[in-house]
Image (cartoon, rainbow, N blue to C red; front, side, top):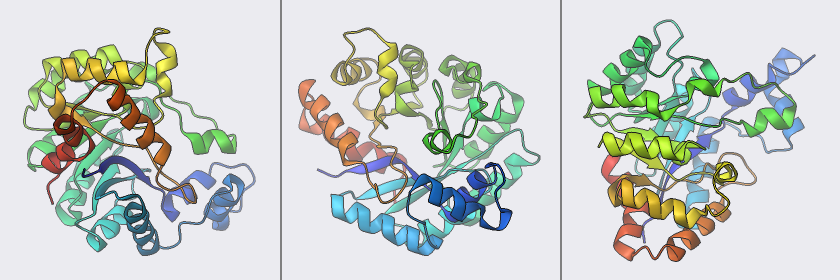
Length: 301
């Protein structure tokens, strides 16, 4: 059984520096070190060291490939270097804020020069509507570069590192409704559109969009704690069952939402999802598509 993880975060030194700058009374020259120390996590080291550590972690758990997300805008260089170092093991995703000047131009350059595979949009974080013209310009970039996907975070958005550091998270989840993706996804049928975490609390809406747009995929990542907002009978097994009934086996991407060390790859998420697939009586062929085959099809080496 080939396992590919479609959702891991590449917490580089630049990520921690950006995080640390938000801390009160922090020495700007040591912002990253301060953030790492207060979180109680391990320093990422150089990009090369972090990339090697990720590959060693994948090897340890029998994971063939993983998508690594540059988790702050402007950190494309980190995932570019990491994926160039391990091109057959790592696929580079990167965060784009379409409200930034020339965001589409910069994104195009990152894909053309760095070989990155997906642009990640966080509308609630950067406070813009998904149907904004600036978002369409990002989709134009993807459409002009076959094989490029657009990842759109919808539903509940919570950044664990910010919460642990006591930093505010002035997000607006009104901008994270999957229904707002309908028109833009229809307009770009050749662009794979990934909604993570089964819609993160907006599962029904994510299913509706995916049912209407054949290019929309759902990723299964994280603890899926959003299920507490659903019916009391809702289980991860029933989520998989319903997603398979609506979307089918070819548009579900396994992911964990792994991010920092020393925790590393989150085995518990894999075990929980594997048990849910067992409970849902998902056969081996469909399981292989979800756990690895669909990722290899969307992001071939």
